[in-house]
Length: 205
Length: 205
Image 1: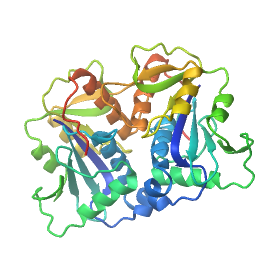
Image 2: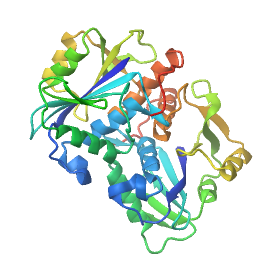
Image 3: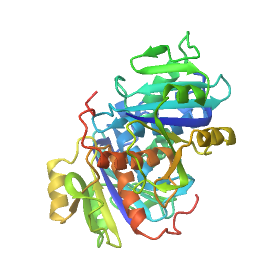
Image 4: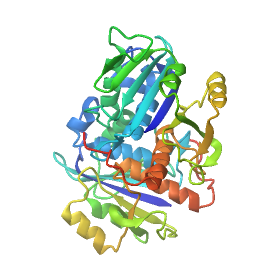
């Protein structure tokens, strides 16, 4: 299983944004939506071996984490508006708690910050996407359950960076040109896909 | 210079679609928009060495080609709705002709099909993204001006495929798992970025 923790410093943890203006109204949730797309979706299907966590730290609204579990999620479409609608809907559920107990069809929401995702992935091997990291093609990536921390357009705030460092995450870079988060995830997946035998877990939705 | 010819079999060549429902109203122009994003945009900037052609063959509307020239384009934002708005706007210009004479700030539109893009790129070296192609990591990619043909969710129609073959295009594949067009472009760019010295042409917008 591969996991991605997508940290949105300004992305709102409430459904109070407009699908007609995602960049302007959601604190750049659009960046995380594109990252979610590249983490989970492939041609005519879903990556059934991948989980993505959207860590939404912006205001207004409480910090929230949305977990999308590629192993069981259904009906995810790749366009931003559709994915945004799914996340907006989930953030509006009534009984969201401080754990992932509120889980419907592979989408779960909890109130809280990055610690929720870290706790949920206990025992996994942490990596972080960073320009100064080891090139992904040279990196040791044999962990059975790798977790990749990915920042947004602002990178990571200091507290988050320190937390990731304390976890002992290995820094990985994806190439000579600085890419968007979604693009970096594509390069990373491609490297992992090449190292693993073609897995039968990438089934159509 | 790198060029991408993105062929949309069903994507409409008129502005008669809704930004509120790109997948449902535009003949899946959303697929080409994501491909455009990954072809031209990088973190905090544009690829100043790249051109993208959106070949829009769907109905209603006449077949049209939109050329986005990364060398001179400005104010491109990565979200689908914003890119879709730019393309919709361009498709509505009054005096579009059968050449790219209608060109504003790096976005040009012409009425016609794939031949327009092919003629515009005369002298370039053709490649085509295909599952059965040579792995991109092993491919000969030294052409000074490579042009990459990329299909949509339906692949290429027979006529287009035959035309690309007649050009003598080299088929390139990007890995063991079948990816979306935008994802395949990211992998391809990454390979090219690694082979070329870090270029100074990727300047901020």
